[in-house]
Image (tube, rainbow, N blue to C red; front, side, top):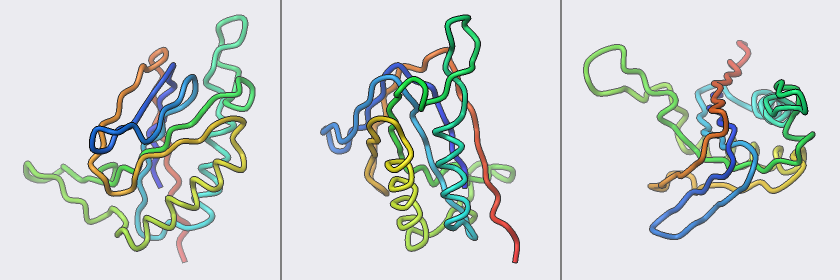
Length: 151
């Protein structure tokens, strides 16, 4: 499971010209799943995202978490995070989980975040053509990955 986390002042996602999710201060999460991802990866990532200390304290140091600042979350599915462009000019997406696997994981991730997050959790629409707008704060952008445990 991969997440690109961007600390934002605000963010929104539109589908077909309609805003389906909008947040203020918090994190925009681009989320992708791969074969082998399951409950362990989803739970680990949800806890990591909510507890990660990337907001500034009174001294300007990144010591505060989403929990500490009461921040929002906007979650957008992004199978292209598992794109492999090492060969040729067109990326391969063979490592991205098939929707039959990814949709339930995405829904479970949203549920886990809604249980843990201190404020609003908004989301894009899985598999839709989306337009994402954001004001990156800092900018702060991190890539988080939880590799599935082997058999």
